[in-house]
Structures are given as structure tokens and as C-alpha cells.
Image (tube, rainbow, N blue to C red; front, side, top):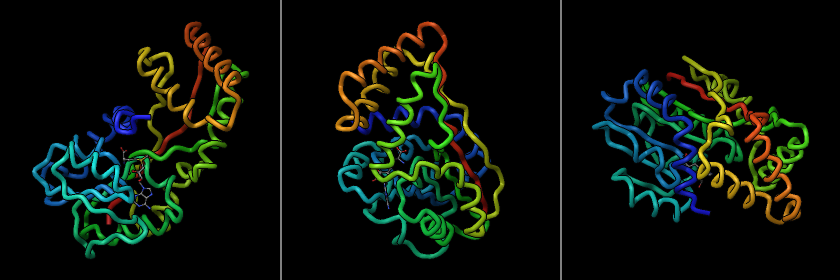
Length: 242
Ligand SMILES: C[S@@+](CC[C@H](N)C(=O)[O-])C[C@H]1O[C@@H](n2cnc3c(N)ncnc32)[C@H](O)[C@@H]1O
């Protein structure tokens, strides 16, 4: 699995939202910006700003990849205990991060602590797999398998649905929150669809039988060609101000 390619693909899903929210949060005039859980830099490397960019991640391998695509100042560290002084950044953001965090409220408190007064906190994409919808009906089992596999990998599968509440609990004033438009399987080009299936097969290996997975892939392809495929994982964002 090429994780950088996967993260680039995920970043494409939120590009319009990020452009809008970064504009609203004043990215072009910001002095310092931090991405918590920056991974391989799919989002960090796309920022157009003169601000000093910072990225933090637990995973040294991801940071090494990130170093190849971004000039940001990178730190290996834990979102639960950010190694930055209070009020260091104008904008602090994360992207597909909080579902992987053991204590998301603690991480959000930390994001708030390192944000300057009147600064902005953005969580761009947190899915809620508990509300996933698959159609036609025989594909519902695929949704169940994938959700269960994510749970076993340590994901908090319902985080997205609690995102605004967590911001509120952390004392962050919410300016805007909502769900992003789901990516329709029919709108995917063949390469994107194959990539999506590479992720599914990797997620489900050791979890479901190979033949059963292939049966699902075939059903998915058939539904896509007949225009009957529905796949909706509500994915939430929140924009708050300190
Ligand atoms: C799904 S990836 C998203 C990466 C990047 N934000 C993106 O969208 O391309 C989640 C990232 O969070 C990092 N991560 C998970 N738990 C973390 C923690 N407690 N502190 C810092 N980073 C963490 C992982 O190492 C991984 O790189």
C-alpha cells in the first residue's frame, strides 16, 4: 500500500472545503500554521502561504516522506502532548486524524492551547462509519466488514458524529461545522476505483476470505455500471476560534 498516494487521494476529496475554510481563517495573512498528524504531507505540501509551516506526527517514516515534499519544520511528537508553547500558531489544523487518537478531547485541548488568541482551529475531515450506508443491500456486509476492520486497527469509528460536541467541550467557539459531500463511486475513474479497492483489500486481509472479498468487488463493479451503487460515509468538519 502506497500511503502517500492514498493520502493524496483523500486530500483531493476535501480540496474545495480546505480552500474555503483556509481563506475564511486568513491563511494568506497568517504568520505560523501547524498541522497535527501531518502524515506524509499530502495537505501540508499543498498550502499556498508565506506563513512558517509546521507539521507534527508520531510516525517517523511518514515524516521522512513528508520531508521530501514539504519545507515545513517537522517534529516527531504526540498530539496528546504537543511540544509547543502556549499560543504559538495562528492556525492549527488536522485532517483525518482525530479518529485515530486515543483521547481526542485531550488532543483538541492541546490544539487549542498552542493556538494564539483569536486564532483558528480546523478539523477538516472526520468520518462517522456508524452511519455508513451501502446500496444495493448485498453490499451492506462490505460496509460492516470495513467498519469492523477499522475498529480493530484502533479507529474510533463514530468520531465524526461527535466532532462538534468535542470542540464545544474543549471550549472552542464553533464558527462553522457540517458534513462534506460524499464521493460517489460512479464519479470515480477506473484508477481511483482500483485504488479504493486496494485499500479495501488491505483493510480486510485476514478478516474476510479472499473469495468473499472478490465477490463484493464484483458486486460493487456491477452496481457502479448500472448506476445503483450508493456509498455514503458522513464525514464532518469543524472550524472554531479561540
Ligand atoms: C490517516 S493519516 C492522515 C495524515 C494526514 N493528515 C493526511 O491527511 O494526509 C493519520 C496520521 O495521524 C498520525 N497519528 C496518529 N496518532 C497520532 C498521535 N497520537 N499523535 C500524532 N500523530 C498521530 C499517524 O501517524 C498518521 O500519519
